[in-house]
Amino acid sequence: MGRKKWRSFRKLEVRKRHLRTSPPQILIVCEGEKTEPVYFSKIKQSLQLPMIEVDNRQSGNDPLRLAQHALERYCGDGKIYDRVYCVFDRDAHSRFDDAVTFLDKTTEEYKTCAGPDETPTTFIPITSDPCFELWLLLHFQYTDKQPCAGTAKSKCKQIEKELGRILKQKWQKHLDIFSNKTPVEIKNLLREAIKNSKRLKGKIKAIGRSCPVTNLHDLAEYILELTERPTPR
Image (spheres, rainbow, N blue to C red):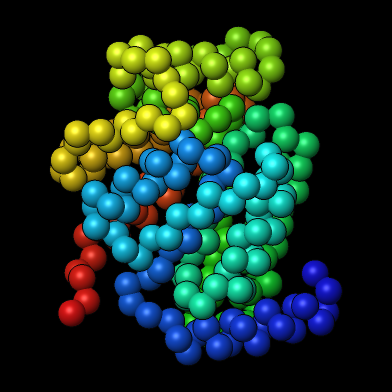
């Protein structure tokens, strides 16, 4: 990041620290045009979480561009965000690792703006391999089955097929897995997905594989934590 641009970000962060509000404000920037925004928007609405903002930026299937947009949105938005989550898939993206590194570096740079008793904004990569639909499947069942060899698209198709079987309809990107669910039922599904995702992560690490896996449980846990916080008067 250029020195001049970084100085402007430092000034912005100092200004934002004075404006920071409670409860914490969350920005979720999604790679997908339909599936992820539908999912997070339903959670926001059903669990009454107005502090969550969902952005379905069209990044041209480029995770690094998505990460850069998240920073631009943070710096240009008048709203104060405490956490910025970037949700994207491994797929066959050549700049996947670059995006993760960019977000980690941005968080470290913002830490230099914070005083000893201040908590700076964090930029957090939320990733799935091979795709976001794996996380959706984990709401309903545990799986560590590795998709057969092939392209990233063909691997995702296998997961979508299983998801459609469970939902008893052909999977489409705009489908809402929480349709007709009460807030209590949505929370229970989130807890099930968190449990299954953590189990999957441990299993994949133990056997030395890299797929399938997701860290969406980290974001889901924080969302559930937000539902337990008292609403300010």
